[in-house]
Each structure stands twice: as structure tokens, then as C-alpha cells.
Length: 88
Image 1 (cartoon, rainbow, N blue to C red):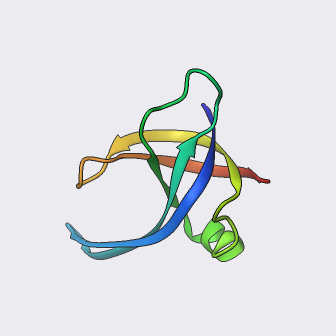
Image 2 (cartoon, one colour):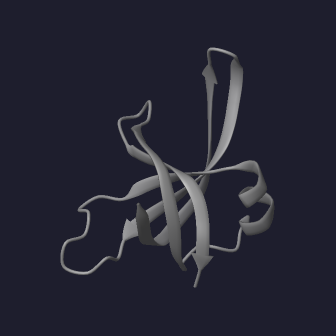
């Protein structure tokens, strides 16, 4: 599934999981898909490779993501995992 959204914020989320402390970078994305867009923002979990390439460069820009996994995080927010295809 392709998702296009404007990056409103880039934040670091840390928590203690089953295997110890977990620190991950999240992009807060707002859907810009036209008439039938999502009402709330979603969090995109940035992988290690993308973090090195895109860190600090995507805020207030439009990001196209190939979504491979959709899940609900510990705080109840919708999260996507996948691959960043394009940053405009």
C-alpha cells in the first residue's frame, strides 16, 4: 500500500520491550491523499538505514511510503512500517 503524507514532526520514541530498551525514530505523517484522507495522523517507524539518510531532512515535506505493516503502538496510535520511496 502506498501512503503519501506531510511530515509534521520527527520524534524519538523509547520504551522497554521484551528484549530490553528500544529506541526508534518516528515520523508523524498527515494524510494528503485528497478527499478521502485519514482523519488522524499516523506514526511511521523509520528503520536504521532510512534514519541515517533522512534524519532531520523530512520535516514539513511530503513523504511517499510503501507500507508493509500496519499496527497499533503501545500508546494506541496507528503505526506504519515499510520503506520511504520519495521525499518531495
